[in-house]
Length: 271
Image (tube, rainbow, N blue to C red):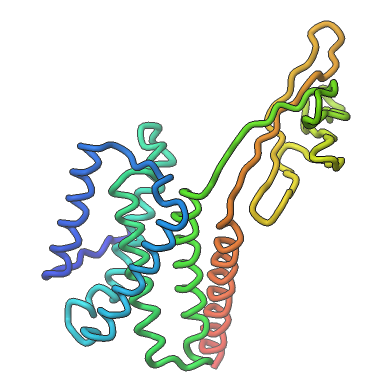
């Protein structure tokens, strides 16, 4: 079993007090409305956090408490707690909305501050060949986490009813197709062709139409005439996610750094 390392001293006491405070706020106030992190609030909080971490590293980087916060032991603690939250949320129905609880968001904020502290500390003695993979992993994880938090506040969803019959200038369903399994006739895929904003677009379940860099259209539902069986309308969901590409960039950086680390260690073993 993997041990979750406990940070001792003042730094550890402050961290656990911080988590207890978040738990108390959760009990009193309930889950967070993530819309409060919408731009520019989320961006401003991220910038403020980076500024605080930079000052802490620049002024007190050699202090024992700061060294403990950026230590591998702190990494294991924060990642272990994050993994525990995630597993519990995925397996226990009562914790399904754990991502909007105060303790979880406080934990993610602490992990981001830790990563930022590690990154800024390593930049002070950065060597390209030796530190590149390390930086890719940590910057990628930080960017993915930050984009997830900021993106939660900026994500907007709205449903659009698309009838088959033309109604003024609203979107119109041109065709709807249900692909069935030849062996038993069960449906395996739903797809539609829609006239949207003057353009003919095609989309299917789990295959959205990319309207712009930040907006996607998803096919989420349809309705058929009970007598004729013809599809009379479908429902599209417009999802605006302005932070999806920064998150993707973070994930790519994390994977690239991990692969570079593995390749580097393999070369060291072969020597």
